[in-house]
Length: 447
Image (cartoon, rainbow, N blue to C red; front, side, top):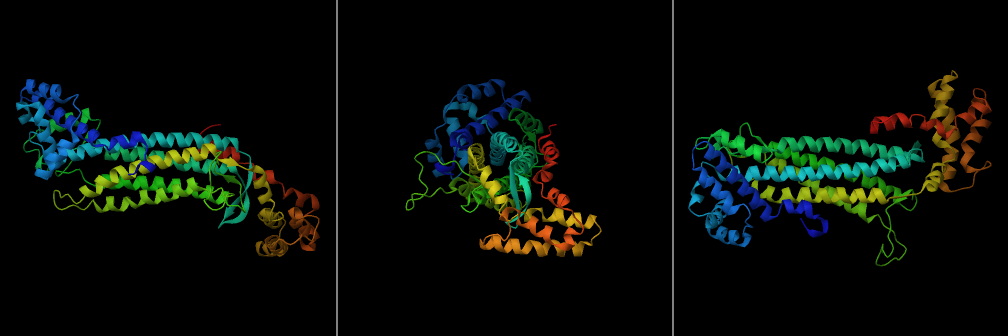
């Protein structure tokens, strides 16, 4: 977690002051519940809130105590006692450190998830706007990186919208799964604390009780959470990679916004590089990399060990802060993306009409030609056009854009089956967009 890739609202969730505040609330709410059950005096529970509710905890002092105790929760409780006084003896009654640590982590991850869900909402809004803006902007679809058939830039955006809609649903589910509370004491048996305390603290902290905590909340929940972050990061990378490809000089159908005064290279003044989306690709790798340690945390010894602890102290902040930053950056990229419809049209026409080859193939089969023969007829006319286009040689016909149509019209086998008018109709670009409205209604749930 470094400032370059951090945003303050997410970072604040993981700051020591926030963590200690959550620890205090867990302990204080537990005291409230214990007081209601008659285990501790109600006046003591009230005094604990009165003495500490508005205190800013001395992080340096807690660190100083921990250097002696070698135990973070004990260090915190010792510091708490310094200003609560004698009633501090009722704090942490029947509880164990994991009750505080695991419940706190659940709160932090829940809050982080809320921010991430809001990030995805902002991204979805940006993608939707660009999708409708370019709903019928023709462009070439590519498979294996090679020209395939026409599509629209709006459909590219609609695909991203549908994917991030799923990302949002996964985050909502992951938040629900990780938002559990454990106040069950040593080895999770409630031997020294009533389960009703757990229920009360869970309610106050916006969580639900963990059914069986075994002293720690089971780490399959956390593994699922971080795996979800990894999947969302992969979706970030997918859209970022698409934009990077579209910005290549030979393609240049879209590019990141290049602001006044921005420099692309220390050596070459002409450069305009896709640095933001390249950065997003790298950040996605980091977030995905944190899913594996989270999965390895699942297998703890018996009722508990702390092999998971060091991992979570790092991946909790790092994964959520990094993904938060990445989603915000991707939103900005989409909002400010420069789109070049003319370049899209130029690339679409680059192969002399070959993008319509499937329509010709199907039309021949409808005229009674076997698929194998139809394929051979279309391909033998397509390959010379491909060769000249790929080598940059001049067209043998009137123009490269319509060369494929010309060759087909001169082929006696093709012309015997398809009239000139029928051939012309097969090269109608709008044919490919007749179901755009249907796809949009599926993606955006409108219309």
